[in-house]
Image 1 (cartoon, one colour):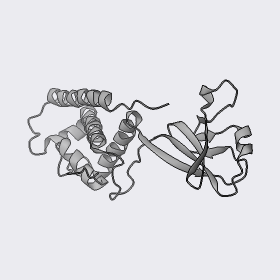
Image 2 (cartoon, rainbow, N blue to C red; image 1 turned 180 degrees about the horizontal axis):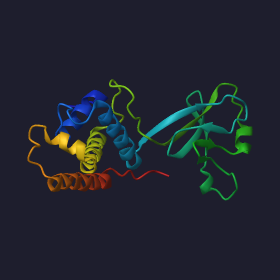
Image 3 (spheres, rainbow, N blue to C red; image 1 turned 135 degrees about the vertical axis):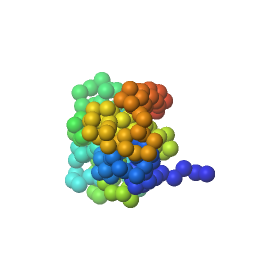
Image 4 (tube, rainbow, N blue to C red; image 1 turned 90 degrees about the vertical axis):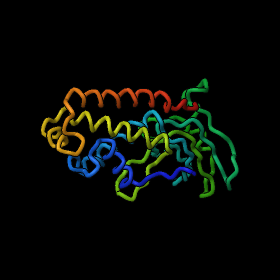
Length: 213
């Protein structure tokens, strides 16, 4: 059966079960939501989203665009869905500003190339690269990834949750009142956190994306 990404409500329920708090007696929905978003960012650093975007020019000879990508590895000038020419990376040419560059959330192309492009509302740039995963804002928001990404997020979320239980005595005492948790000692809790830490370390090595350049 094909994978269907869960929305925030469903993955929050899964995380609550991972934390042995299925009825959310210890962690509030807001706290679980924070754990999920932190996990999305953490896992997304090593397992970013590869995608292609088209950037329209707002003026002639425009040579920079705001973009949220981690890295860009290919840029093309397109017209009517046809590639007119590609722009090399700045690091791959023997010239200052000889190609495109990404810095501080802005994609730059050389001015001499921008001057050659007569946009006239028909030509745009197509950029290929790696983007951060989208975090959750609403319960209906769907996880921005596949099954591997989901289990990575749940693993990191659970690790963070157990670390909070270790560091917050009142939270731990409240958590111990849940069914099945009453006989868990601080040492056993530490072992559970270590287990999730080891699991995330192994998953991180498998998920780490060999990014194209």
